[in-house]
Length: 332
Image 1 (cartoon, one colour):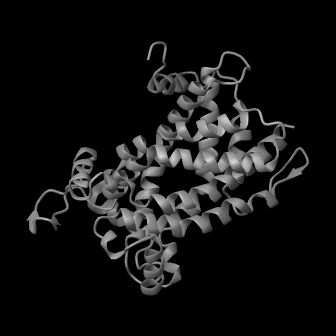
Image 2 (spheres, one colour):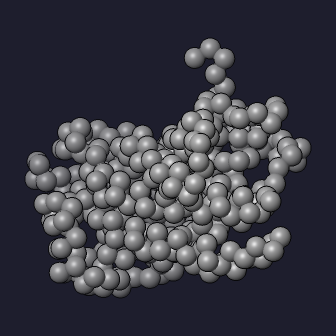
């Protein structure tokens, strides 16, 4: 596209101009962390934000069971156990108790506040790097800033999601027998630091979808200029942003989950042929795409989509509403 600016160049430019751009990352970071924390008693400019912090933790508690079902449906070794989303919920509860739906919640629960803060702060940073005046950013600038934000965040989210997914794939009753710390130690001992970043490239490609995520939010809440900028506008904008973000990037999420559910050198039985191969078909992005298409067709790249969208709506409604409310208070 003529005149288009590469997101990679924007990302590098952002790093080079970090010290010179006029920013207020504290506001975005605090607002973001408040949207993801249970207890965030902050008192700035006379405002107390402890009451605004609950949607983040409530959203996570509501969303995680849907995420567990999504991961199970995406895992080729486990998906055959479940006939549908409702059957997956019922089976997990029956075989692993209700707490089985919350396997792997420790790592996102411990990091969600920090991650939310980084997402909003980095997005605003990459947005301001492109802007030469105080005008409303164009949709292209919003998309590029969101994509750069997602690429940056993938270096943090890849190991966190790896641990989460490994725990969610455990079929033991309850929350599982392997803690997050023990799992980290085991992976590092067997595969080194590289093992904790398995699926990083797929995570980075998936998280480029933050461009669509912020694009949907910006279009609904800024570009359309609603007459009444109420909490309902924030709720609707956040929900739509979550749906758009996931729809644009979900096939790569399937690839990421399948890669992170296995080890690159793992020997696997290919069910269709009934023979053992020494190569893991999910060892790379390309091999995962090829193998998924071969055994599941194009529909394989949408496995787990419905619970993901059900999860995305309430979580992003709460996240954006709290973020915008807190950011507005801090700026006043």
